[in-house]
Every structure is written in C-alpha cells, then in structure tokens.
Length: 285
Image 1 (tube, rainbow, N blue to C red):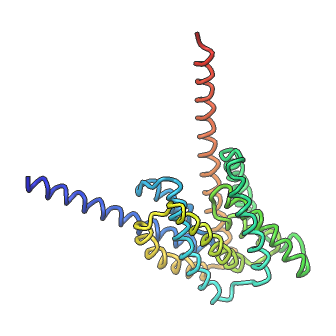
Image 2: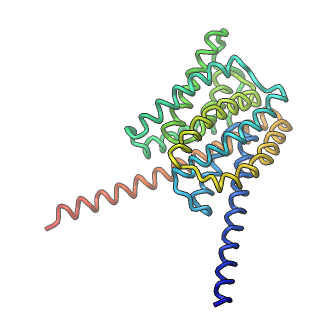
Image 3: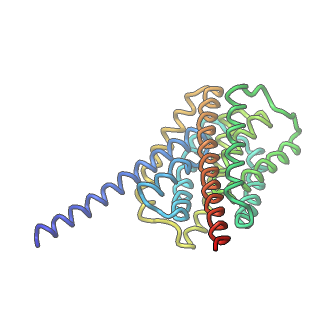
C-alpha cells in the first residue's frame, strides 16, 4: 500500500513539474515574440496552452490575455526608452482599436467565424509577401496631422474588429498598416502597437477573469517566464535594422497566415463532409 501511495505521489509531482515546465516555455516563447515583433505573443502561447497544458480554448484565450498585458507592457517600456514611439499615431490608433474590439466581440457570433478566419489568414499571407518581396519605400499617402490621426483610427478600428471577432492580436494589422500606408518606421510601428495591445488586452483579461475563463494557477507560472522573454525579444529588435526587422516580422506573419488559413479550410471541409453525411442519412429509407 505504501509503495502504491508513493508512486501516486511521485506521478502527481511529475505532472506538476511538467505543467510548470510547459507553462514557463509558453510564457518565454510568447514574451520573445511579443518583444521582437510588437504583438501579443498569443500565436505561440495559445497552441501550447490548448496542447500540452490541456486548457479549454476560451480559458487559453483568457489566460493568454493576462500574460500579454504583462509582456506587452514590459516590451513597450523598452521600445519607448529607445525612442520608438509616436503619440499622435497612438491617439488615433487606440480610439479606433477600442471601438473595433467592442464591435468585433459583439458581432462575433453573427459572423461565419471559420470562413472569416480563412480569409483573414490569406490576407495576412498577402501582406507578408508584399513586405518580403517589396521593401516599403515610403508612405502610400502623405496626410497632414489631422488626416494622419484619422487614418490611424481607421487602422485601429480594423485591428480591433479582427481582434474582437477572431481572438487574434491586432498587431497583425496595426504594424503592417502603419508601415505600408503611413510610412511609419518599423520599430516605431511596433512600439505603438505594443501600447495599444496593453490597453486592449487588459480590458479583455478583466472580462475573462470575471467570466471565470482565466487559469490563475498557470498564469502564475507563465507570466514570470514571459517577462525575460519580452526583454530579450525587445533587445533583439533594437539590434536589428528596420529592414531586417521587417523581414523577420513578415516571415512570422506569413506563418501565422498559413496556419490560420489551413486550419480554417480543414475544419470547413470536415464540416461540409459531416453535413453531407447527415443529409444522406436523413434522405435514406
């Protein structure tokens, strides 16, 4: 009896250690991605949370937002200290993003989510290829201060809508839009994106916490590991040239786009096959 009890305790301790290790890995990887690319890092954290950590999808999103608030804040401070920020663009972007996030969340259930996710993935892939193959050579438009704020608000609205409807980081839209449309330097675009993500993620994290969709135990392991990751990622970003950082950003963006489009397409096909089978059964004798 004693041997069996000790074995059970050992298995339990081993499971706790494995969960802690995967939590730390998810946090560090997400922190690096956030600091390096000016995003949230959820593209890395959420799959690890739903995979090795076995969280439900909604809990993974909620826990990820808690961690993103921390990592994006740390990285944003480092970008700001390096002088990579623009208050004018930030003002317009944050107004549009907040409104877009609320609208996207409200209409999420009315949108064919898989089809939208598929199209969004293809959109990200197109933007990434544009940034990879043709180096941005200045703004598409040369607006005055007021028009610049207005365009930033539109960009923020688009990113907020995508974030609210799809549960993706708005940085995937914020950064390339500021670089391509407004001619913002890559480092500055990422610094602005990080501050907007801090605010949006904090609101989302509070909402998820109230709904009970945050794994607070896992968050205690993930967040501390994410902080050094964010510092490392931001430090690496400041060492890269603007074009070098654009290439890294575009490569990661293309991978995210392919993953989103591929998984959505696969699930749509499974749904179509299942629907066809159900219809055939219903039509049977």
